[in-house]
Amino acid sequence: MVDSYVSPMRSAAPAGSPSQYTDPQRIDALLKTSDPEAVAASGRSYQQFAGAYEKIAGALLNMRTDLHDAWKGEGAAAAQSQLREVWSAATTVHKTAQTFGVTIERHGSEYLAWYKYNKPPSKSLSEAQSWMTGANERVSQTWSSLPPDLSTSLPPGAESRRRTGVRLRTDRSGCHYWGAGWCGSRSHDTWPVRGGRCRAGGPGRDETCLTRRCDGAAGWCRGRAPRPRAYATQLAVRGREAVDR
Image (tube, rainbow, N blue to C red; front, side, top):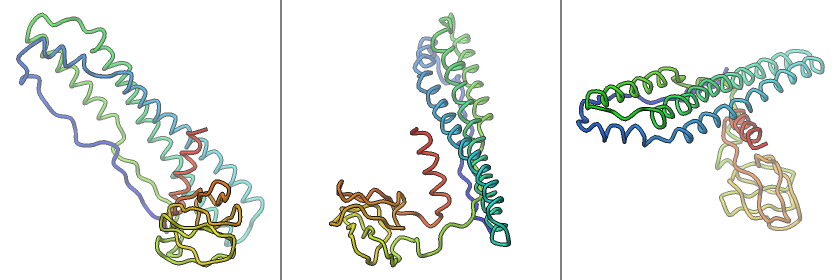
Protein backbone atom coordinates (compact mmCIF):
# COMPACT_ATOMS: atom_id res chain seq x y z
CA MET A 1 0.00 0.00 0.00
CA VAL A 2 1.40 3.38 -0.97
CA ASP A 3 0.31 6.99 -0.97
CA SER A 4 0.47 8.64 -4.40
CA TYR A 5 1.20 12.30 -5.00
CA VAL A 6 0.84 14.28 -8.24
CA SER A 7 2.00 17.90 -8.39
CA PRO A 8 1.61 19.94 -11.62
CA MET A 9 4.87 21.39 -12.92
CA ARG A 10 3.44 23.72 -15.56
CA SER A 11 0.24 25.63 -16.22
CA ALA A 12 -1.78 25.88 -19.45
CA ALA A 13 0.04 26.20 -22.75
CA PRO A 14 1.14 29.75 -23.63
CA ALA A 15 -1.02 31.59 -26.14
CA GLY A 16 -1.00 34.96 -27.87
CA SER A 17 -0.39 36.73 -31.15
CA PRO A 18 1.92 39.64 -32.06
CA SER A 19 -0.73 40.98 -34.44
CA GLN A 20 -2.27 42.98 -31.58
CA TYR A 21 0.88 45.13 -31.46
CA THR A 22 1.15 47.77 -34.17
CA ASP A 23 4.22 49.72 -33.03
CA PRO A 24 7.59 48.14 -33.91
CA GLN A 25 9.39 50.16 -31.24
CA ARG A 26 7.02 48.89 -28.59
CA ILE A 27 7.58 45.32 -29.74
CA ASP A 28 11.36 45.78 -29.53
CA ALA A 29 10.98 47.28 -26.07
CA LEU A 30 8.84 44.38 -24.88
CA LEU A 31 11.41 41.85 -26.07
CA LYS A 32 14.07 43.63 -24.02
CA THR A 33 12.10 43.78 -20.76
CA SER A 34 12.84 40.17 -19.79
CA ASP A 35 15.40 39.23 -17.12
CA PRO A 36 17.49 36.39 -18.61
CA GLU A 37 19.83 36.24 -15.63
CA ALA A 38 17.03 35.74 -13.11
CA VAL A 39 15.40 33.04 -15.23
CA ALA A 40 18.71 31.22 -15.70
CA ALA A 41 19.44 31.44 -11.97
CA SER A 42 16.04 29.94 -11.25
CA GLY A 43 16.87 27.01 -13.51
CA ARG A 44 20.18 26.47 -11.74
CA SER A 45 18.37 26.43 -8.39
CA TYR A 46 16.19 23.58 -9.63
CA GLN A 47 19.31 21.73 -10.72
CA GLN A 48 20.86 22.25 -7.28
CA PHE A 49 17.68 20.89 -5.74
CA ALA A 50 17.86 17.91 -8.11
CA GLY A 51 21.46 17.27 -7.07
CA ALA A 52 20.41 17.09 -3.44
CA TYR A 53 17.87 14.38 -4.22
CA GLU A 54 20.42 12.52 -6.30
CA LYS A 55 22.57 12.29 -3.16
CA ILE A 56 19.56 11.12 -1.16
CA ALA A 57 18.85 8.38 -3.71
CA GLY A 58 22.47 7.22 -3.48
CA ALA A 59 22.32 7.15 0.31
CA LEU A 60 19.12 5.09 0.16
CA LEU A 61 20.84 2.54 -2.07
CA ASN A 62 23.62 2.18 0.49
CA MET A 63 21.00 1.85 3.21
CA ARG A 64 19.36 -0.95 1.26
CA THR A 65 22.63 -2.90 1.24
CA ASP A 66 23.22 -2.33 4.94
CA LEU A 67 19.66 -3.38 5.74
CA HIS A 68 20.01 -6.54 3.69
CA ASP A 69 23.21 -7.50 5.52
CA ALA A 70 21.82 -6.81 8.99
CA TRP A 71 18.17 -7.91 8.88
CA LYS A 72 16.44 -10.98 7.48
CA GLY A 73 12.93 -12.31 7.49
CA GLU A 74 9.43 -11.13 6.64
CA GLY A 75 9.82 -7.81 8.43
CA ALA A 76 13.04 -7.11 6.57
CA ALA A 77 11.36 -7.80 3.24
CA ALA A 78 8.58 -5.34 4.07
CA ALA A 79 11.14 -2.73 5.08
CA GLN A 80 13.04 -3.25 1.83
CA SER A 81 9.83 -2.80 -0.12
CA GLN A 82 9.11 0.52 1.57
CA LEU A 83 12.72 1.59 1.13
CA ARG A 84 12.43 0.94 -2.61
CA GLU A 85 9.38 3.20 -2.74
CA VAL A 86 11.26 6.00 -0.99
CA TRP A 87 14.27 5.51 -3.27
CA SER A 88 12.01 5.57 -6.33
CA ALA A 89 10.40 8.80 -5.11
CA ALA A 90 13.79 10.44 -4.54
CA THR A 91 14.98 9.36 -7.99
CA THR A 92 11.81 10.71 -9.60
CA VAL A 93 12.21 14.05 -7.85
CA HIS A 94 15.84 14.21 -8.97
CA LYS A 95 15.11 13.47 -12.62
CA THR A 96 12.06 15.73 -12.83
CA ALA A 97 13.76 18.68 -11.13
CA GLN A 98 16.88 18.24 -13.27
CA THR A 99 14.89 18.30 -16.51
CA PHE A 100 12.89 21.29 -15.31
CA GLY A 101 16.02 23.17 -14.24
CA VAL A 102 17.99 22.56 -17.43
CA THR A 103 15.03 23.66 -19.54
CA ILE A 104 14.47 26.87 -17.57
CA GLU A 105 18.17 27.75 -17.49
CA ARG A 106 18.45 27.30 -21.26
CA HIS A 107 15.41 29.48 -21.85
CA GLY A 108 16.98 32.29 -19.85
CA SER A 109 20.62 32.03 -20.90
CA GLU A 110 19.99 31.33 -24.60
CA TYR A 111 16.55 32.46 -25.78
CA LEU A 112 15.75 35.44 -23.56
CA ALA A 113 19.35 36.64 -23.55
CA TRP A 114 19.51 36.69 -27.34
CA TYR A 115 16.33 38.75 -27.74
CA LYS A 116 17.42 41.15 -25.00
CA TYR A 117 21.06 41.68 -25.99
CA ASN A 118 21.60 40.52 -29.60
CA LYS A 119 18.42 41.18 -31.56
CA PRO A 120 18.92 43.99 -34.10
CA PRO A 121 16.42 46.87 -34.16
CA SER A 122 13.32 46.20 -36.24
CA LYS A 123 13.11 48.14 -39.50
CA SER A 124 9.36 47.69 -39.97
CA LEU A 125 6.22 46.51 -38.22
CA SER A 126 6.21 43.21 -40.09
CA GLU A 127 9.81 42.54 -39.07
CA ALA A 128 9.06 43.37 -35.43
CA GLN A 129 6.05 41.07 -35.44
CA SER A 130 8.20 38.35 -36.96
CA TRP A 131 10.71 38.73 -34.11
CA MET A 132 7.91 38.46 -31.56
CA THR A 133 6.52 35.39 -33.31
CA GLY A 134 9.93 33.77 -32.98
CA ALA A 135 10.12 34.67 -29.30
CA ASN A 136 6.67 33.17 -28.73
CA GLU A 137 7.77 29.98 -30.47
CA ARG A 138 10.76 29.72 -28.10
CA VAL A 139 8.36 30.05 -25.16
CA SER A 140 6.18 27.27 -26.56
CA GLN A 141 9.22 25.05 -27.11
CA THR A 142 10.33 25.58 -23.54
CA TRP A 143 6.85 24.87 -22.21
CA SER A 144 6.66 21.64 -24.20
CA SER A 145 10.02 20.53 -22.77
CA LEU A 146 8.95 21.00 -19.15
CA PRO A 147 7.76 17.91 -17.24
CA PRO A 148 3.96 18.16 -16.98
CA ASP A 149 3.92 17.01 -13.38
CA LEU A 150 5.82 15.34 -10.57
CA SER A 151 4.28 11.99 -9.71
CA THR A 152 5.61 9.93 -6.80
CA SER A 153 4.49 7.15 -4.49
CA LEU A 154 5.57 6.76 -0.88
CA PRO A 155 4.83 4.28 1.90
CA PRO A 156 2.01 5.45 4.16
CA GLY A 157 3.18 7.76 6.90
CA ALA A 158 2.55 7.46 10.62
CA GLU A 159 -0.99 6.75 11.75
CA SER A 160 -3.42 9.04 13.52
CA ARG A 161 -1.17 9.37 16.57
CA ARG A 162 0.88 11.81 14.50
CA ARG A 163 -2.02 13.96 13.38
CA THR A 164 -2.32 17.46 14.65
CA GLY A 165 -4.59 17.59 17.68
CA VAL A 166 -4.19 13.93 18.66
CA ARG A 167 -2.84 13.61 22.17
CA LEU A 168 0.35 11.63 22.68
CA ARG A 169 2.00 10.15 25.73
CA THR A 170 5.76 10.29 26.05
CA ASP A 171 8.27 9.31 28.70
CA ARG A 172 10.66 11.98 27.46
CA SER A 173 10.47 15.69 27.96
CA GLY A 174 8.75 17.26 25.03
CA CYS A 175 6.91 20.10 23.40
CA HIS A 176 3.43 21.09 24.44
CA TYR A 177 2.25 22.49 21.13
CA TRP A 178 -0.31 24.92 19.81
CA GLY A 179 2.22 27.65 19.04
CA ALA A 180 2.73 28.87 22.62
CA GLY A 181 3.51 25.41 23.93
CA TRP A 182 6.09 24.45 26.48
CA CYS A 183 9.10 22.17 26.62
CA GLY A 184 9.27 20.57 30.05
CA SER A 185 11.74 18.32 31.76
CA ARG A 186 9.18 15.81 33.01
CA SER A 187 7.04 13.16 31.36
CA HIS A 188 3.75 14.67 30.25
CA ASP A 189 1.09 14.62 27.58
CA THR A 190 2.07 16.43 24.41
CA TRP A 191 0.25 17.76 21.39
CA PRO A 192 1.69 18.00 17.86
CA VAL A 193 2.74 21.62 17.46
CA ARG A 194 4.73 24.05 15.38
CA GLY A 195 7.11 25.04 18.11
CA GLY A 196 6.93 26.48 21.61
CA ARG A 197 8.84 28.25 24.34
CA CYS A 198 10.77 26.01 26.71
CA ARG A 199 9.69 26.14 30.31
CA ALA A 200 12.58 24.72 32.35
CA GLY A 201 14.84 21.78 32.83
CA GLY A 202 17.36 22.29 30.05
CA PRO A 203 17.36 20.60 26.66
CA GLY A 204 14.69 17.98 26.18
CA ARG A 205 13.60 15.53 23.51
CA ASP A 206 10.21 14.55 22.21
CA GLU A 207 9.20 12.18 19.44
CA THR A 208 6.66 14.71 18.18
CA CYS A 209 9.38 17.22 17.26
CA LEU A 210 10.55 16.87 13.68
CA THR A 211 14.07 17.94 14.59
CA ARG A 212 13.88 15.74 17.70
CA ARG A 213 15.35 18.22 20.09
CA CYS A 214 14.30 21.04 22.32
CA ASP A 215 16.86 23.64 23.32
CA GLY A 216 16.14 24.89 26.81
CA ALA A 217 19.01 27.37 26.71
CA ALA A 218 17.74 29.01 23.56
CA GLY A 219 14.23 28.97 24.93
CA TRP A 220 12.50 27.58 21.88
CA CYS A 221 11.46 24.20 20.63
CA ARG A 222 13.47 23.63 17.47
CA GLY A 223 10.81 21.66 15.69
CA ARG A 224 7.77 21.73 13.47
CA ALA A 225 4.81 19.43 13.69
CA PRO A 226 5.21 16.30 11.57
CA ARG A 227 2.39 15.82 9.12
CA PRO A 228 0.54 12.52 8.78
CA ARG A 229 2.71 11.38 5.88
CA ALA A 230 5.99 11.32 7.77
CA TYR A 231 7.98 9.76 4.94
CA ALA A 232 7.13 12.61 2.59
CA THR A 233 7.97 15.18 5.24
CA GLN A 234 11.30 13.56 6.02
CA LEU A 235 12.18 13.32 2.34
CA ALA A 236 11.43 17.01 1.84
CA VAL A 237 13.44 18.00 4.92
CA ARG A 238 16.42 15.94 3.78
CA GLY A 239 16.28 17.69 0.43
CA ARG A 240 16.19 21.15 1.99
CA GLU A 241 19.08 20.29 4.32
CA ALA A 242 21.17 18.97 1.42
CA VAL A 243 20.53 22.13 -0.58
CA ASP A 244 21.50 24.28 2.42
CA ARG A 245 24.77 22.40 2.77
